[in-house]
Amino acid sequence: MTEAPMAPSREHQEREPQHSEQPPVPEPSHEPALDSPEVAARRRAFAALLGEFRRTSVLVPLGDGPGPDEERGLLTADLNGIRFILAFSDEQALARYAVARGEAGREWTYQTVLGARLLDVAVPAAGVPCGVALDCADGEEGMVFPPVRGIVPDEAALDFDMDADRDAGGVA
View 1: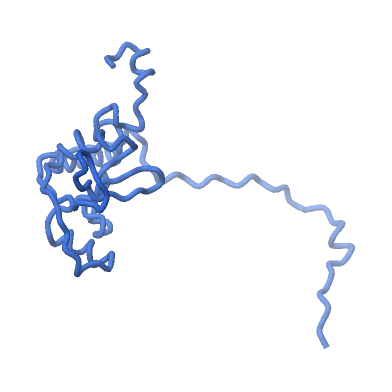
View 2 (view 1 turned 180 degrees about the horizontal axis):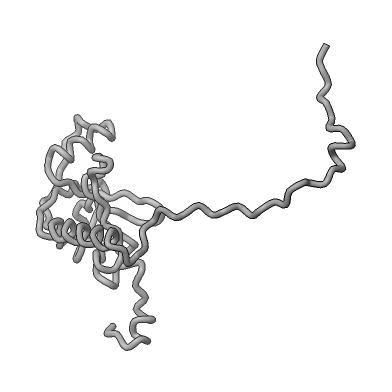
């Protein structure tokens, strides 16, 4: 025999709450303010990392599709409408990527390219929102350089509006 669920008593249903409900207290934000010393330190650290990337030659595998002048293009991956050129700090990082893809036995043809050339030339040439993903198989040790001002040229940055800049008196 199954027991029927008990319905609350009528007396319980009609009772007025004895206490007034208080609105929930918002939890304090653990995000530092944009002008905090912590944020300033993170920005300086990223600027140093970006500068190091710009001065360093990286390995960029060639993809299967054609690039400019019918040559093989650079290996890219698209994520949420943004194309990322895949770059690797050394052959070991490229090998980890190949293993992660299950393609360790494949021969990987690559070019050695200066990071600045990737950001300043290859990204704008992509013709779509594009950034660079460095050592993408290395989890938190990898780095993403998104297509935003300060990383890529303004004309390739997603957060740059040429019309607004021109209206504000900037050079376009």
